[in-house]
Length: 248
Ligand SMILES: [Zn+2]
Image 1 (cartoon, rainbow, N blue to C red):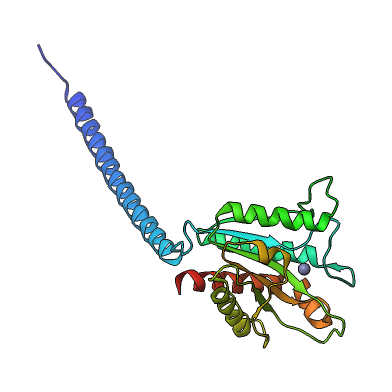
Image 2 (image 1 turned 180 degrees about the vertical axis):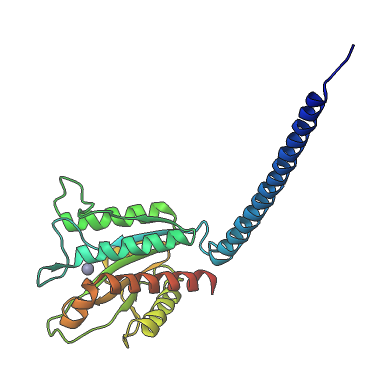
């Protein structure tokens, strides 16, 4: 016979009540968790969308070669223990970071303090430049930028300027765009110039220019060029000019 005492029925009743209570509450917690998860996913999608809107990869698939001038035994201009080659590289690395943020594929002709001359070169400078010419031409890049600093004896000249060679028909337009951005943002009233005497520029057939981003021979500009803040500013102006050239 199936026989249960009142006490047992009582226990079963309370047991079921507790189970139901726990399940109900568990269910509620589950709903809360699902709700929180949906909210989290929605927020993530929103932020992702906002971020994607912010960074549209404006230079996606563009190949850009940066050429920090000099390196190794060749320091370029040298004033008060400041080597042009060091500053050229520092600025080029900053430009590289910014252009990569925009989706560009960026290469440098050098990533450290060395030149590209072959070991048994009879003319180290020429060998270095010739190898830079070859790597840039062989890359089939969309744009190349040689980065240098200017110098002259009086110490009074200042300001960034752009040189171009007519070997590529796009070079004058590139020079114009870059000089425009330099004039707007880097306190220079200098103008872009055709210059067909530069060893590298005369031989690189890819589109590109020589950027002389300031005068190392000018004391106040030298102080600026040495500073991380000003180098970041130059890099940012170069990034804007690259975007302007490709995207208008
Ligand atoms: Zn130089």
